[in-house]
Image (cartoon, rainbow, N blue to C red; front, side, top):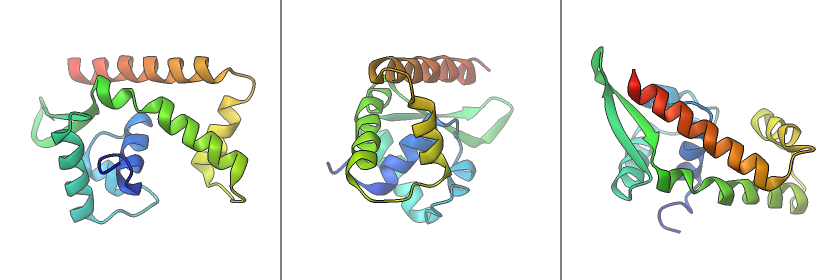
Length: 130
């Protein structure tokens, strides 16, 4: 729980699944994470093997963060947490949450999770081959 039980760690992993990959992109999230907290969580997730980092080939200053297989394996947990929240909490979800619930309608949970994980692996392989 020390690694993934933190709100900010989950938001970072969510954002990675949504295609964000740089510090600047994470800073633009609607949750407005402070830069020192973001740096700390990126380091924590990297140190525990959920993320890896590389640099852009054409820009040696910009770090690219991406999920490892260990990080990708968190998706079923996050999926179930979202579904549980929708069933049990009387809460309005923001645009990302509403889109998530729209996307999962009519699709089995297992298929949605597998498709999302597979799509991320393809995306990761693409950004690492650039």
